[in-house]
Each structure stands twice: as structure tokens, then as C-alpha cells.
Image 1 (cartoon, rainbow, N blue to C red):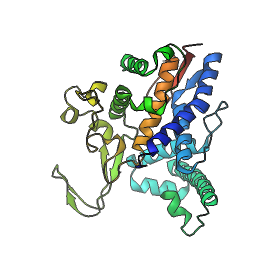
Image 2: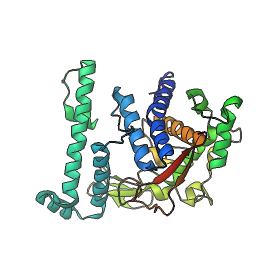
Image 3: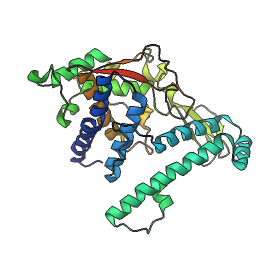
Image 4: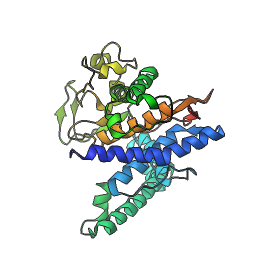
Length: 322
């Protein structure tokens, strides 16, 4: 992922997915005045694009029929069950696991779905690459809108500015303010709000608290993204400008400050891939569609390990140029 040629490959793959999968779904919704669940839509896009890059096999969950996706449901259920593990005493978890009930039963079923899916993907990789089965499967399996629109319009050729347009890889790389808006959104709404760590040996935290291997440390990354001591007095404001330098370039923040992609040695290897995919999707939607959350639709967080919306995100879209 670090080789110089890969960014263009990644961009082209994301753009291809936007053109051939996302746009047809949006067009169908626009023509029939349907409300779409954007949360589900983006999850499908991420799933397909990720596996297409990893092993060249697109699950094709983002298509006109929007079929049921067992792995997506399993991830959602697993996230809720793992979150409850942080709340329940250990003996409750053991009791539920032993009796095959409650959140532990749900988690067990979700794990089976995930492992079956991973095993299927692994089998495909092995067949394609003739890598054999020397290694065990378990090891491998585990292994602000006006500024944005103005920036988009500045990138689009003048003769194309008021018509349908899809951005190419080079144009996406110039979207500085969009990159900033996405980072700012991730700062305020980190996809995984809570994380846990267990010390390998007795230690003393910077706060002076003593910890040992029998303890589980939970840190609230969502709250850290909203701390004035870290981000300043305007920490609660959605302010993309904080990510743009005086020269008009992308301003980089230390990974231990901006934790949305974790930090060394656990930093997310797919960070650049994710940002490219988000820019490809955002640029296509914002330039070509009007979109609005369905009136009266409640937007509240779900009780889960992931920052999902409890009632989905129902949105109506309309083609700007139709």
C-alpha cells in the first residue's frame, strides 16, 4: 500500500465502484423518489471496495437490489455484543456463554458468520494464487457544504461545471478542503468511540494510577476528540479549517492526537485507502445530487462498539442535472 503507484490504483478502484455500483442506486432512488439508508449504503460500499482491493473479489453487496448482507448484520450484532461486554461483570458473560443465551449467544452466532465469510474469502485467495494450505486458516483469517461545493466546482472543467460529472484520481487529490472536512468529521465522530487495552505487566500511568495485567483499561477516544486541552477552546465546533495550513495545503496532526485511525504500532494500514474512498463517494454525491435527511427522522447513536445510528439514516436524493 505504500508503493508510489498504488494511490492511483486505489483511486481508480474507488471511482469504478462509485460509477458502476453507487450511482445506479442513487439514480434509481432519484427517479422513483425513494428514501435511501445512507448508513447502509456506505457500509456496503466500504465492504465491496475493501474486499475488491484485498483479494480482487467484490461481494457486490452494493447493487440495485440491495440484497441482504449477512456479514454486515454479523458485524453490527458483534459490535453491540462486544460493547455490552464492557458493561457486564465477567461472571455474567461466563454464565451467558455457558447457557448459550443473551448477548454471548448473539456474539457466537455473529462470529460463526464472520469466520465462514473469511474462510470463503481465504479459499478464493488460495485457489487464485495457488498458495496451498501450509498456514492454518485461523491464522490467516484473524490475520461544511458551501466550501466543499466551491472546491468541487473549482476542480471541474468550466464546460462541465453545470452538468453531470465524476471526478478522476488526480482531481480527488486536489480536494484539500474536502479532505479537511472528512478529518474534522472523524475527529468529532470517531467510528469506534471506545477502546480497551490490558497491560502486559504492572505499570503506572501518566495520571499516577497503578495498573496490572488483571485490569482492563478503557479509553474514550470519542471524548478525546472533543477535549479543549487537546483541540482548543473551539473543540466542539465543526471546523475543517483547522486541517488546512496557511499555504492552503493539508495540515497533518500527530496520530496520538488524531486517533481516528489509531496510532503506532496499531495505526490503520488502510487510512489512505479509506480517505480516497470517502472523497470519491462524497465528491460524486455532492456535485451531482441534492440530498436531505427525511423530515422527522430521528438520528441518535446505537448502543454498540461502533458509532452507528440506531434508526439508520434515511435520506432522499435527487439528480441535480436531470
